[in-house]
Image (cartoon, rainbow, N blue to C red):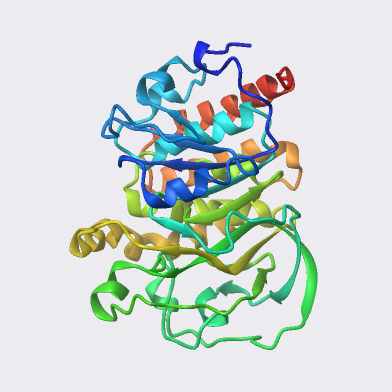
Length: 351
């Protein structure tokens, strides 16, 4: 087991929150750090992150310390890209975490980080085949999530009165109120940014698809291999296309995803909306085709084949020209690093 000097005294953990940032410690990160006794906070830096970054209660991994880690993925990841968050996931896994929550540095806790650590939840289950505009189940306002194909926005809502059931969901997406995660077209045309959502849980059965993001998302054991964020796509697509892959891989094992209200309140960092639109343009063009291709793949239902399923999805995206072939080397490195991280966790004891 390789342990760099700065982390010899770190204890084994059961859960962690992972964030990446290029900013000085924000008020929202200070709030998260105040919960570090329950939810250890791992913050991944990048080349643009201030070199004097420090926050009590946070485990900060700067770019130099990342290079000391034994993970094969590290030297392959581009700098100044959101995908460096992958190293935070691996760090959490190497410390023993079996539940990983993630957010961004501009999200304030509402009912988050979560107190319930059980993937089984009681909620309304939606079994509508194809795309679902998840916001329709939380508000009467006309709003759609970033990553929902534009063709699906007018789609008729079904099963609003579906019965309440208890199901296991291995990924829980908590909605962001205030300035939620909508696409650039919504921001440029509607622009309403003071949303409050209904406090409920909506469970999507296999075959019901909805994009989810990395703003306030909890991943449980069984979904962790699908945390991988692709590097050779732009920032606005990396978590969205990841969500497509994660859903399809979970469907192969008859697993579900839950969407929950009252997650975080976002005070969004400054964005150029037209630049966001340009970054999202490839999504508007390819989102529907990507999911159509992924659902046609024959994936294994065995949990031990999660890595193989993940790689198969990226091979298909490479064949389609969605990601370049060089992405496949990173996916394989991630799969190998998952095994290494678990090995490291297995040899760690509380100190």
